[in-house]
Image (tube, rainbow, N blue to C red; front, side, top):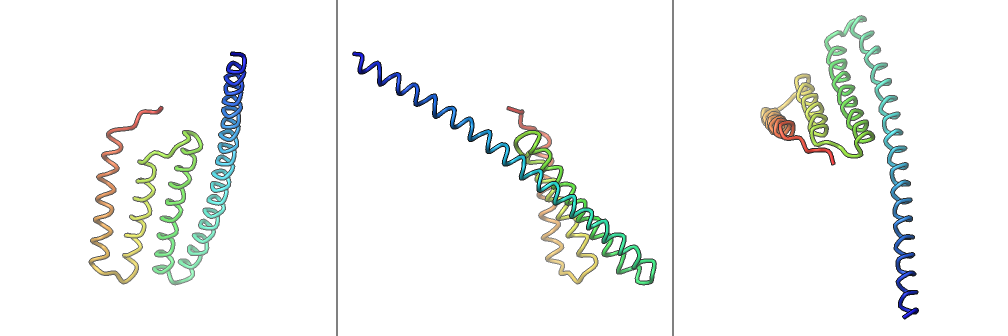
Length: 155
């Protein structure tokens, strides 16, 4: 009888050790994720600063003569910066909530795809490519409205 009691105590002690190890692993995982998302946010900030520098250079190009081409580059650069802001917003939401909401992902995709569609204005494009882009954007808008209308409760 005492032998059986001893094995139960050892099993309970072993389960407690496993729970402690899992809790520590979860803490380490959270620290690594917070560090990596912080690093990504920092890199995005540097990328946005480079984009703003490119905007200034394009502005100089617009003043010095080729204003149409410089304007095209500036519009595309602004759209890229807006996409970066959406990605940063998603990362910040992940750091705060511990998860990413579907609406944030759809918003980011919409910003990128609309930027691509506007970029088509300045290049040779086929009607099929424009229609495909419009179809994807329309689908994402519908999904965005569906997900915004029925938010998932926080757990």
